Image (cartoon, rainbow, N blue to C red; front, side, top):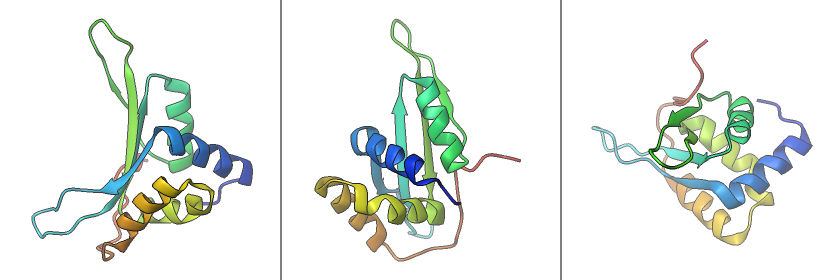
Length: 116
């Protein structure tokens, strides 16, 4: 998952304003996974994030409003990206990332990955 430095800076800046760093709800075994999520009406921007994350972009139509494009990654992949962008984030986002990374590591699933 090598990302060029300029793409990492772009991603950090975008997620600072539009991203969400959190934990999933517990699964049936009580395990929670770190999650990075982002959604907006700019399809091209979300697709660029999707390429960097190697993640599926979802689309939601809204009657009378612009369509929303969104994605999320979970688990080990989310941990990896959280650690990569952490130094470039503001204090509030750093605190959210710290909370997500404090959860014990579960099985290494990368939910949200594209189906190849």
